[in-house]
Image (cartoon, rainbow, N blue to C red; front, side):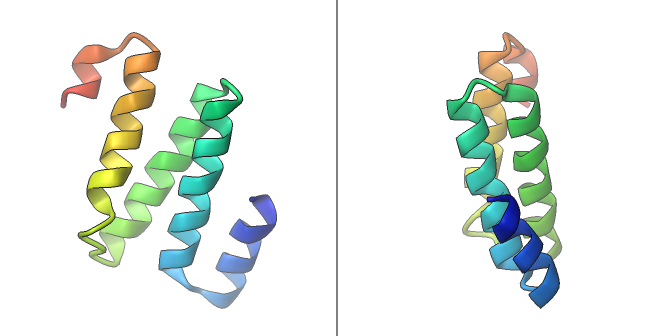
Length: 79
């Protein structure tokens, strides 16, 4: 995943870079590393918003909400 992120930066494909951050976030979530998963999900969201990738923004928001819920921050997850 880290290699995919680096390659995405090199070719300046914002959509693929967002996908790599999202996938890395999923992997980190599965490993129980919620803090780093959240960072990657927020990065994916920012990139998707920057290119107005409307069909993928809801998935990013869902991933962020899921992690916040896992961390017991249900109020933030509902925002």
